[in-house]
Structure formats: C-alpha cells, structure tokens
Image (cartoon, rainbow over all chains, first blue to last red; front, top):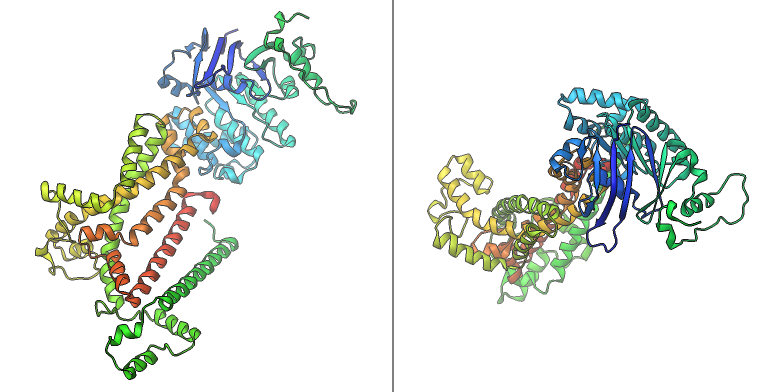
Length: 281
Length: 340
C-alpha cells in the first residue's frame, strides 16, 4: 500500500527546552485511520503539528519525514503553503477558539477553498454550502451567514470539518476533535467525520486521550508516553496490549456495571520509556 | 442589522448613561467655578470699585441666591449657549472657542492620522518579528517618541526643517502675508481656504501644519505602537491563527486578514483616547509653534483665573471625550459581531 505518511526517528525539540518534546518516533500511515493516544504532554499534538510543519519555535529532525512524494524535511514554506489546506489539513480541538470570531462561518470555509482553487466567490459559496450539507447541517444557507458565537459547539466542529475536508485532502490530522464537545454530540460528530474519511479514502491521524474512542474509530493505535512511542497495535488488539503503560491506562478506566472501588493509579516506572519489545517481563 | 426590541433598549440605556455623564460633568464644572479661590465679582469690577458697585454686581451674578438656584441658573446659561464673557479677551467665551478650537481640531486630526497610520503598522511589524531586529528597532523608535520632551523636539525640528532646510513654514497657522485674506467660515483654515479657492493660502497652511502635526503624531504613535504590538501578540498565539495557517494562508495573510481584524476594537479605543488627549490641546507644541489653539487658550485663562473661560473649556473637553466614547462604541458594533 502506498504510504501517505512515512516518518522515521522524528525528534522535536522546542527552542530553549532542555529535553526534546518528541524523541525517535517512527510510524507510517496508509489510507487508514491511525490513532495516537497518550496523556497530556506526551507529545502527540506536537507530532501532528510537525506533519504540517506548523512548529515555528521547534527544531524538527528525522531520518525521514515524507508525505506521499513530498520530502517534508526539505519542503520550503512556499511548497507547504500549497500543500496545507489542499492535500493535508488539520481539525483543531475547540471551535470556540479555532474559528475566527469576527468572520462568518461560511466565509471561513470558502476562504480555504478560494486559496487553492481558482473560482468565483459564488462558486466557492456553493461548494461551501454543499459541504455544510455533507456534515449534516440542515439549514446550510443560514449557517453560512452565522458568526461562530452564534453556533453550538457541535455545529462549530462540523463547520471546522467542512472547512478542512472541502478540498478533498489526502491527509487529515484530527487533534482531539471531540474533547471540547458535549458527550451527547461527540458520537454524532465522530460518525460524520468517520463517514467522510472512509468515503473519500483519506488518511486520518486521530490524536486523542480517549482509548475507547480510538478503539472504535481507528484501525491502528500508537501509544505515546513522555515523548516516546511505546507501543503500536491494531485497534482490535488494544485489550492485549503488552506495554505496562498501555495496560495501566486500560486498567484505570471505569466500567459501567463494574466494581465501584478505587480505580488503579499508574505506578510509573523508568523502564516504561522503552518500547514494549525491550521490556523484560 | 435588525432593529429589534433588545437593540432599542440598548440604545435607550446608552442615551441615559450619556445624559448622566453629562449631568455629572455640569456639576463638576459648576463646582470648579465656585471653589476656585478667585473672586468673580472683583475680576469684573476691578480693585478700586466701591462697596456699592461690588454689591450690585454680586447680586447681578446671582451669587446671593442659594447654591441650588445658582446651579439652575448655570444650567439655563449652558442650555442657551451663554457662557459669559472672557475677562482676558473681553469677548464672549463662545466666540473665542469658535476661533481656537478649530485650530486645535485641525492640528489634532492631522496628528492622529499620522500617529495611527504610523503606529499601528509598526506595532504589527514589531509583534510579528518579536525579539528580532525589527522589533528592537521599532522599540527604540517608539521609546524615543515617548521620552523626548515635545517642546524640545519642536524647537529642534523648527531649527532643522524651517530655519535650516526651509522645507516647511515656521510658526503660526500660515505665513504672515496671508493673514486676513481668507473669509472665516468654519475657522478650519484648510477648509476655509479650499472653499474660497485660495490655493496659495491652502498650501501655506499645509506647510505650517505639517511639522507640528508630525511631531504630535510621532509622539502619540509611540503609545499606539506599543499597544498594537501587545494586542497583536495576544492574537497571533490564538488557535484561529493556526486554523488559517492550516488552510494554506501565508504568514502575511493570517496576520492582516485574521489577526488584525481581531484587534480593531482595542485599537479604536486607544486611538480614540490618544485623539482625545490631542484635542485637549497640546499646549507645549502650540506654544513652540505659536499655534492659536485650544490648549494655549485654556492655559492662559487658567493662569489668570478667567473662570468663565476655564469652566467652558473643561465642559468642552468633557463633551469631546463623551463624543469619542460614543464614536468608539459605534465602531465596536461595526467591527465585532459579538457586540451586536
């Protein structure tokens, strides 16, 4: 299978930081849905942003970092401007902050399209409204003219999805796409995203701290811990994870109908910094 | 924009708060007039007036009446635009003001256009290039504008650009030669001369205003630059800027199309404040350039305790600030959909 992303030994160090935020991370992504799971500060978002080369204040090194035929390590900003928003895009966490508060939703959707496709304003508007329909917005003409503060979180996130999928990209990074949403609309938004990604054969990287979400919406899962990739598994094998950190995370989840005692707490070990193959049982 | 009940209520609320502010302002000017250690009667009748004359004027001014009646009389005078006569100039205060205020408005408007036109872009550039040489350079430029005393820069600039290079006109609003040639309609010299079609005078006026306006503009641009820089720094770390970059927009496009739009409200506020400060009169510059403006008028009247004029000036400054507040409130609504 042709790889959408191919990353070998990616290391990212923020300027002025003593320790790298991400160390020696390797993975590939095909036309599949890949989950990256880890706790806050584990470096999962940093990896996502590095794929779009959005980290201005960090030093990114790798043996290889390519997106389809493009060598991202050598791609100049000029080339990135053409890639971003057309062939690769990213869904951000909270529409309250990720949409420009003083521009109409529809305008923001159309703006990305007009940046990459030569067309009239009316065409861009028509495309944007079509896309709003595809993210199951019932009254797209009206929503097009609303400001971000006039829409709900779930609708805002669907606007975000519409904006990011409008140009039919090959790669979408979804950085905690539902953490800011109400539990009730989470699943709805995820189903919409999932449907579009499958239909269009988009390579999706889903960054999350929610194991269950990743289990049901991804094909493969990367587990990150303290800037390192500690385990890679098929989503359906998640329960058979071998790395003690992954097992610890799974054990720390509450279960409906399960015992009501205290949940186990992670007992962190230095040896966790190693990938699971090297951990001696 | 729909005109619904909520908006009407908002407008009404606004109107009431303006009236309350105005009323407070009137009380303030009235009190200033009463507590100043000057004797308005003595100022009119002179030092050697007889007791009888003094008592007469005292009654004429209504000073024998209770305070609240005096205040009502003051309100009546203000409502009929009767601000009394200036002791210093012997003219009605209102006609004095009509002469000096346009001179200052002309200068301040010119200056704020320069100040904001220079300050806002410099602030943006400094923010975008934070801690790089551009930022450092702009910081030095604005620090200089902030810290150099304006009467000193005024004199140095006159020496260089007027006496030395002869690029601009010297002091006053126009060359001596043209004084009295233009019919006074609005007392805005640039407007009056343009209406009269006297382009020589217009050019002379422009030549005279450019230097003091540039200096004032430079000094207020220092503040505008600094504030714009910090407003922009707040914005460029926001997530919606990341969104814009993810869409493939260039750095320049994200800054001007997205970030700058979000600081307009704050920018309007500080530019309005800076403009207000300029309208209050830049006494120092007006003195150095012999500019017959509002600041000079207020200061010289204050020095000799010409209370009718001082009270009126204070009232006008207050009204100017109220007006600027209304203006920036309106602009908020234009610039930020969340306030509509």
